[in-house]
Image 1: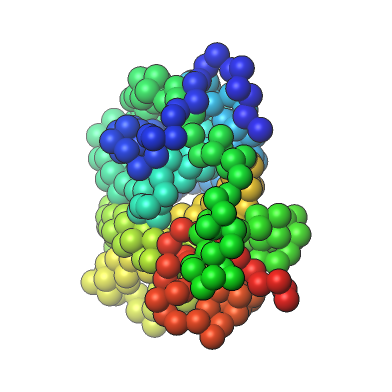
Image 2: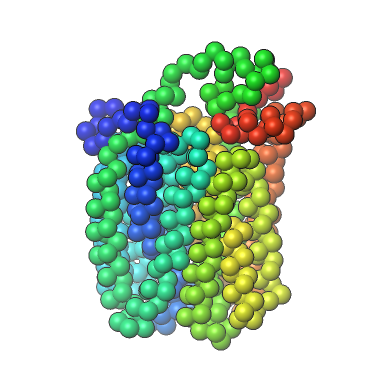
Length: 451
């Protein structure tokens, strides 16, 4: 349970759920994600310049990204737990200092190892403070529009990806990547500190969770009334032990993001190899992530109607289609189109995990559990980024790397499909479409006594 004696934050009244205060908090959260997650996409843009300056191979040049994503995932568990106990503001302030220091350190580094360790710092303490804890916090401030609210928060990650790559590419061409990194640290660090001051209040939903469920919601299922979130047995998510359900979601998170990392991490290098230049690759990355913003918002609306599991299943299937399209086409115009389509297909995947945690697991553990699943997705991004570079070094081509990504995506699709199969008979077997829609609107349906 949260530490109610913490002086750094105060509990918000329940009336602020779905309120104007929640909306302003969401806007502040969006700014924090844009600033704190900038390093995730900047490192892909500087990859060719760093590889040339330090004289390393493609796999070694990808290691800073891999280290950053692994540390970001590990840090997400810690920052999620700290936010659960002490509130967001102190966690965000420490993260702001780490982002500033990491960028400056990377800009002054004299080797690929120093460059990589600086990105590890930004991931472990900096970016981790502005992703998993903010996703979990946003889910707790909203009920009626929870899906779109979490999608807006998560879209800050892609706004960062659409905003920073062309700016950094221009900085590389004008003043060099080192000076660009130092300026990035100052801008992002100071901006995060200022926004963190607006995040003192704690979410009110955790206090509400301990209250007994109204009689209508407890007995509603027997009377033919659609069950609500309060009638859900959160001690058995998907009819499984919480640890088992969490592990399945983590494996699914690794698998989907190994697939996702191939285009996102290597599109700039891929375009350089094809002779189109790094600037064209940066434009494709920016386009991909800009379309990801649209995808996340649309997926949020869809999620409010069909629930997190079905949204994740849809996103996984579409991502597999997007990866397959990279195989037969390598022209400049087709790559722009496919990059846009890939962004539109996969943008809603990661936010769906936060919604699933909010729908099925105990709310008091939201920060830590979302942090664990986000850690898995980031390990997947790290593994996928390094693995694709290694496959390129071995084969001299990215074709095998795309096929590898498709295999991992199939694993994700299989796990999510199985979880959906376990939920569907309980909520929709023999029920009308109207009943299913009402059940998922307030959270996943309760499992029947037979199960």
